[in-house]
Image: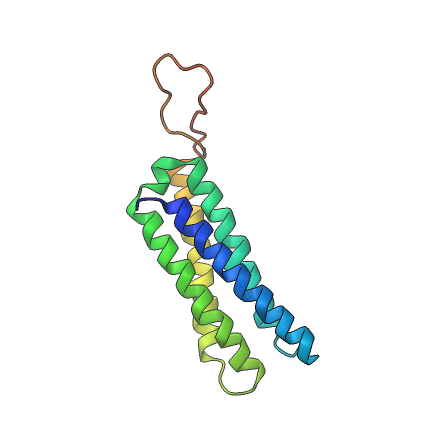
Length: 140
């Protein structure tokens, strides 16, 4: 996927803005009953997306893989399913979306672990004649 880090960071910024606006709304109405959903939006939507974007920026071979594109779609789906799912569960309507979103979150993190083990961290190849480039640090 082209520009994988950019996609992760752009989504992270969008989710963070949504979380901030939601937080302001909760504060203005003095209704914090959906705080757990708000927290998951910030954690998975902003923090995890930012961590993943940083990894893919540091490890371009991983960022160019099809797996990275799938990872982006999977984590975006996680946020879009889990956040309203938690809100629905808190309001007593249904827990199904929260359950599906939780499974998606586990799959997203498992996929990230797989990618890190497969590609390591950093550049996979040293440029000829360059003494200051990062080297790959694959897992042992």
